Image (cartoon, rainbow, N blue to C red; front, side):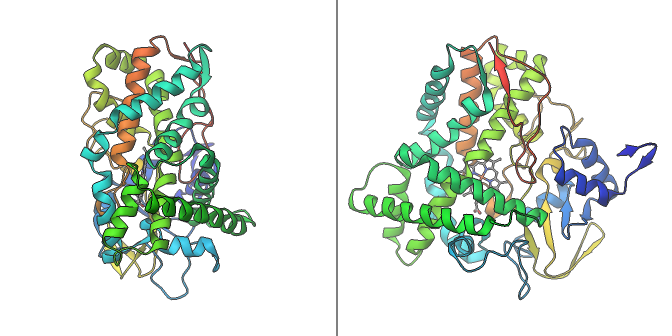
Length: 412
Ligand code: HEM
């Protein structure tokens, strides 16, 4: 950006971008795509901002791995040899090739669009029961009072987990985000690994006992279906892989969905003409949801990828072992793909947005997240016709992974 008539070097600007909470990174993305679409950052990794390379890289599992490829190469955070390291080694998002297919093939049917569509009414009930709690107040913090409990309620109910266990999963989700932040920025709190070991061990024991319970007393919930899928093919997934999978699926939808839902309502309120359009024509709800995912997703970066071999991408020479991050947020604003990309327009076709990633690691919970967004928007249209922002200004969360306001005060 321009300061006192001078333009800061891209590297300097990138460090500010990851360490400050910017209300609008779009001008920086415009500059990155124009000057260095595949950019070597001062933090020691590549950063991809153009749609063509972002989409291609996400699908290219031959040249990019989910874990370090060089001997003794770390991910940006040394996890040691405790529970956190063990869990990370088996986490679905960190698996490559046939190892990944082995696990993903087992869970895909459970999270397929038809399987999720059956849950539409349950998700609507969750949305309405949270709104019921707030209805009389006529004012709330949309983020904390609505968007935070929504995905936790939906996912924990989906798995048939007792609500007493909420806190354990929420603590686990928080520490996982901290680990992903550390992998992207290279800095973290001194006690991160010990805290991670402690909460991961507690969560692990909890899931083991829940899975054991479902083996003895199968129910109609998702955890029972996962346990049955494993029992049907015991050679396909070990007990500890099952636990790691459950822990990751349960928590992967917490803050990701919380921020995405909040950002959707924030931008609709900030653009009253767009909100009026969808209020007057609810058939636009799905298109508004897709545009919200394109314009301001709650997750704005991929997990770290590692180059499997030397290669050239967009004129840059990438060496075997190099780390790379893909910016779905920047790619979603690429003018080569989206006309006037910096305009929030719920009538555009946003289907090509890549906020759920692409390829084999595409978000497993994408259909569920969309259901939650649709149910939220429909309920807000129906039940809160006078909804408005208390203030147009919001403070943005300081995060390298998650994007959203720290709070969103609304009234009606
Ligand atoms: C709007 C909310 C959400 C967003 C924006 C989002 C975004 C993403 C992205 C970008 C990835 C790919 C990461 C990469 O390739 O590096 C991903 C993977 C994943 N997501 Fe989501 N997610 C959301 C909600 C959910 C929900 C609700 C669940 C589960 C119920 C979930 C479960 C997963 C899982 C298990 C993976 C790993 C898939 C694999 O490695 O095969 N996500 N998500």
